[in-house]
Length: 337
Figure (tube, rainbow, N blue to C red):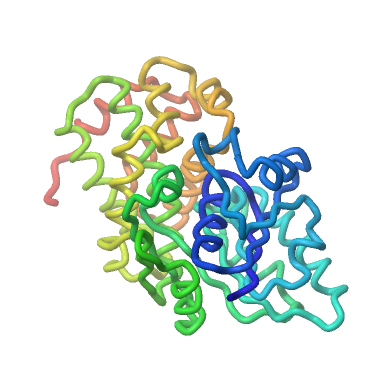
């Protein structure tokens, strides 16, 4: 049994905490909303994020961060990208006050790129945890809707770290009869695949909202994968990573299911909703929107051709209407695949 703390009680944080509880570990699930912590602890439900969900009795829910991490052997960040630094600073402050000090293994299961710095989440964590003792940083990512994981649909994801032994620890913690976990040392590729696929998820929703067919979806996914790979390689990733769970796998999940909030947001835009209104009406973070901004800037900086990302950027920033952007994509200069 391992003492694990999950920071973030949204859909994915709750699902991962539940997996760990079902696997027999001692789990603390932290949320900064006291009323949500009370619901999780007393009712064992999370009505805002997961309907028909009952939290494992082995999971303790709290809004007290000090209590949440005081005995943690493993700390997992499952909060939106924009909250990573804020929560990290709180955790680091708490860790520095502990006597004897903790030496936790850190992992995250969020998918995004920071605005402004354009850093991956593991890079953000490394910066924030400077001067604090910890074992390693692992990313847990792959094609996985929380709604299906909590109902034990068969799922496969990846634990990636430059420290292979640390990745194997996370693999062992989560793996069971319905959740299979592979390991990888390509943390760059796994993080970028998980983040950049959200852009294509938005585009897939737009396509479906415009009533385009499977031909369009197939072209979008395959050409989207090509530009994700180009940027990934420019940033130091192994191109083969994008043919695995964090590339093709995550793309299939995000572009093919209404469970994806990126798809749902894109669908609303395709149906004619103003992009800013579509994002606001989601009621949850749509990582693909901010990731589009970051990827667009990175592509320009590294001279990487990303026409689909650029088209989504134009739509989100209302520089062009949907059908004009689509025609511009189709009428680009002829080239070989």
